[in-house]
Length: 301
Image (cartoon, rainbow, N blue to C red; front, side, top):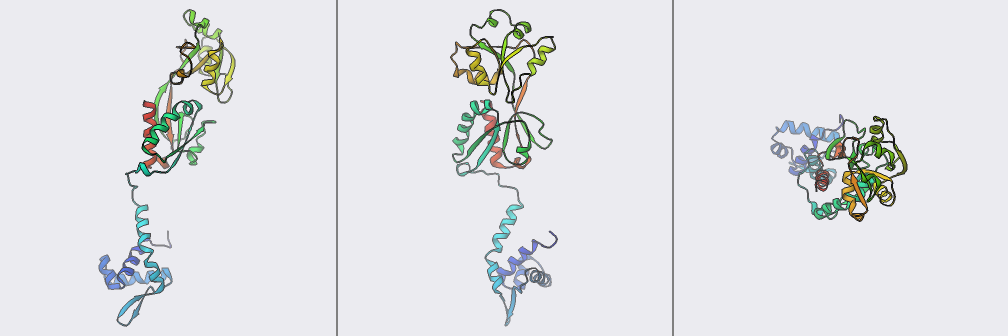
């Protein structure tokens, strides 16, 4: 700022506290002439005399008397703003709402576990879970969400990223499915009817690319938005579901053990990395860092 010198606040505070130029000079370790020049600058900046002579003494003007109550707190606030944030975090009294964007599978299977970990330490913290319509990074950049959890998209170079775990796709069918009666080859797998998961209604994915490399293709009979719906269809039909290993492991308790059977895919679809992502504005925020640690613990468990 070219028109305001915040260092004048310190000089003003000394003048108001001491009530004299000489006293303020001693307090700040300045010469009397330097303090007099500073008083002249303060008078010009405030448009008030601040200190006026009353006989052999100096007295505060009404404006200076009013400022004396506010200037010390202004200095403390300025000093706090220009210092590193305190690292100590009082979780018992922390009141904050964190917005976490993730896919349906995470919200369904991991939100309760994360909520329990959070409220055990910070009972007044609120978690707001939002579903991911896409991998657009604007929500992070604009501060609309605190964390994004999922597969890294076109995030931009400034977005911070921490890998949580690696995952892969598996096939799931009902118990007694004909596919299980003999070794599962790419040809036998492709010959089945399939149910796939896509938020955008797409039926083509990594499995189809791997099959195409072998000159094969599969017939997709259903496209659903979530893994649980795919498992429900597979449990009551001959359709083959494609889900992630982590989701099936967490969700199989919702289905009787006799209903579903998983198997390794006969083609390689590679692995996927699930990460948490956040904007640099939250990198050193103590509460946000604590939340990221709880997310890591949740997935680690």
